[in-house]
Length: 247
Image (cartoon, rainbow, N blue to C red; front, side):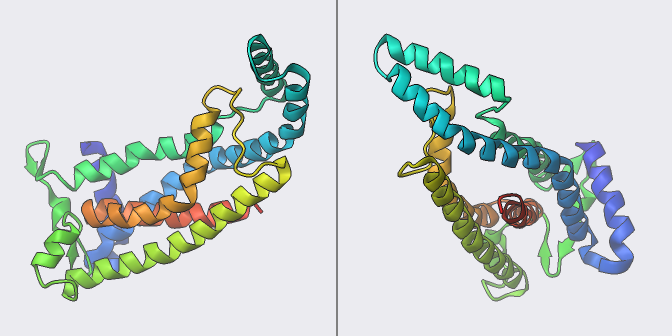
């Protein structure tokens, strides 16, 4: 974690002439953008995979008609579906990777700005702020120190407003993607194939995905402000990226 702290501090020093006391906050945003850039190739692959899976649905429907879905025929159907995915080089779980690979960065920031010391030394990053809000503080701290409309409280209200707008657009985008998938596959919902291992779970995730961005409001309220900045920046990036990749 000390190496990660040094990286954030160096980025903050680099950005200090432009952002002053908010340089560490700007460094976190820049770091988040760097993480998202590194993960972007996987996001593109996930988008291609989703389109490929949708394109396979008519062929999977034919396999269902050929093999049936009950008894011993169900095993033949599952094998045939797996062979089809392997033949077309389509993974039913590829869409999970971009999100999973971002979790370590989030938890690093969370622990970094929740620790009073690093390597036996006082954590200097806790002295940094975003305007009037300490990066190591939480919304509850802002409410205790000046209330919702105090200096720190206004920073959180601004973040909540950004999250609400992003969540609304994410909701619309996810619903549009789900409806497009249903129209393409001729199903009433997202249409996860039960014959593909893990696809049922992915189908459940897709059903709740339109509402996931609204949960970001809760995350921003309970984690340190530095981690909240990561979440807000990453969520905003994700909506823009998805709107481009899934056109």
